[in-house]
Structures are given as C-alpha cells and as structure tokens.
Image (cartoon, rainbow, N blue to C red; front, side, top):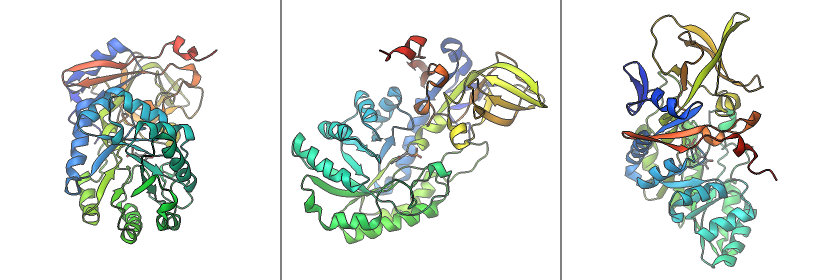
Length: 411
Ligand SMILES: *Cc1c(COP(=O)(O)O)cnc(C)c1O
C-alpha cells in the first residue's frame, strides 16, 4: 500500500491528514517534503505493539529522517534513537532526547565522535571492530571513569535478499565482527576495564522481506548469548520492510514478531527501525516544468531531482508518482525526469500518468525515509523545504535553503 490513513485522496485531491497538499505547496513552493506526524506515531505504536511480548525498546534510526520535529514527535511517544554519527547525536540531543536513550552505531566512528558520545553519556555504543574497543576504554577513563555499555555488532555472514547496496550482513561486508572475533573478546572482558559488555547487535540490511536470513542470523547470535549468559541484551537492528508500490504486499510487523519472539524471551530486546516508521508518512511534491515528446516518448521535466531524492538513482528504487489532483481519462506513458545534468536523474520510468502540463503538481510517494537525509546541493540546488502536518495544523519545519545558504561556509 502506498496510500494510507494519513496520505490519501479526498474529493480527488491528495491530502495529508485531510489537509489539501496543494494548499500547503501554494505557500511553501516546490520541491517540498511533507510529513504526517500522526502517521509516524501510528507506525511507531504498531511496531511497539507487535513486539510487546518481548517488551522491545524501539530506537528510531535517525539516518532515515533527522528532521527535528520528527525527532521530537517520536521522543514524545517514547522512542529511543539510533545514531550513526556525532552529528546525529547532536541533532537528537537538540531535539530534547535523553542521551541514555541513544544507541551509537557505525563502522568508522572517529575518536572525536566517540569522545562526544561518551561525554554526553549515550546509552549504548554498538562496536564494529576491536580497535574501537581500546579507544572507548581509554576515552571512558579520560571522561569520568564510568563504564561504557557496549553491544558487539555481529557480522553473521548471511546474505539478505535485498538490493546489494542495502545488504550489510554477508561476510564480505564491511560491517560488524565475525563470531570468532566476538568470542575472543568475550573470553577476556577484563582487558577492557571501563567497558561493560552487555549486548550483541546485528543489522543485516534494509527492506528485509525475507525472514529466513534474519532467522539464520539470529540463530548465530543466540549461539553467542548462550555461551556467554551474562550477555542479556539483543539488538536486532532495523530493516523492517515498507511497500513502495501500489498493491505491494509486505509482511506485517506482528507476523515478523511472532516468528522472532519466542527466541527472544528473557532478553532485553532492542530494535532500530527507520524506514518502517517514517517512509510512508512522507512525500516529495514537485511541479511539472516542461512536457516534451522526443524519440517516441513523453518526458515530463519536474522541479525535483536526484539532488532532493537520490533513491531512484542510487538503488534503482521505485517511488510511485501521482498527481495532486486526480484527473479522469486516458493515461500517457511518461518519463518523469529532473533537471540535474545526469542521465541517472530519472525519477520514474514508464509511468502511466494523466496527461500533465506545466504547472501541474505531482507527489513522489513513500519518501519520508532516506529522502531529505540524503539530499545534496548537487548542481548548486538549495535543499527543499520540509513541512510537517500534525492533526489539523501544519507548519514549515525547515525552510527552503537560499542561494546565500549555498555560500554560507565559504571563506
Ligand atoms: C540504517 C540502519 C538501521 C535502519 O534501517 P531501516 O531499514 O531504515 O530500518 C538500523 N540500524 C543500523 C545499524 C543501520 O545502519
């Protein structure tokens, strides 16, 4: 499903929580990201309910959407946060979250980032290599001598069936440590006196429809926790799938939870969902600039591009594209392209769309995750505005960048 209880047509107009999107973009312009906070809360509650039997703690993966209003809304309903950089920790703290609710993950944390995380007292550090442990141990001593709670990231050497760029759990991936390395560490925890080894972490990829890889990885993880029973926390990472296409069926979170829960009984369980909380709560609105017929094809050039939404260019990802005003009648096979000077700047190939004319507006659906966080200034394009809808209200959460913003840091 691409439309949902928050993002749907009412009286032939696309709406976010019953607010006409055209009314919003008439004020804020295009391209514009819009988010429904109600939908994000609902997705969060749905996951929490699904995993209630193991009392899972949900840490929202900030790299999916770092908007401060989004972070505040999720903090208010009890989410923790999964950060992969010092910058993300900074954003989360600025949003008002408690440092103890932060998990700090990442393959290449710098000394400065680790020192920043430890100084602020983040709840967990997910460690991905042995060298990092010595550094954490030293920095913990410099800071206050308090033990730092650590989860070791297991590379389970299983390959998830997803886009190759989204698979992170195979042996050849740069992520995590293999089980034998983790065993060596857990055999002599006293080598790191200021580290409290408390959990094992895994995250084998994103858009994981295929539960068998997750179960195989979890079994490898449980082999470790069985041999080291003083490890009582399991962090399963993120990766819960989202439907990007009309009528695409994906496993509901409670179905996934049922298959995992009995194996997790007795452990403190953490999850790091990103996409599953925010993707279908957001969209990117663009305006058609030009329509041209060329080489037997119809091109609609819109004012959004791979700079605002890189997923199609980066992963060959599919985002449904729909007009803001539902128009009856024959559709045209349309190539929806952006203005950026790259052939990869193709937002939608061979889409059946009503005949669009300049000035018509379309929405790129399911763009609430890995949209704005991956946006760039390529082609010196100011990054787009972000607006949030909360119940009957909406507001500009992050203003559109200006040309002056493009030069801000140049000396
Ligand atoms: C990206 C990432 C996540 C979130 O993945 P989703 O597919 O958005 O749920 C969780 N944990 C880690 C370690 C990640 O790198």
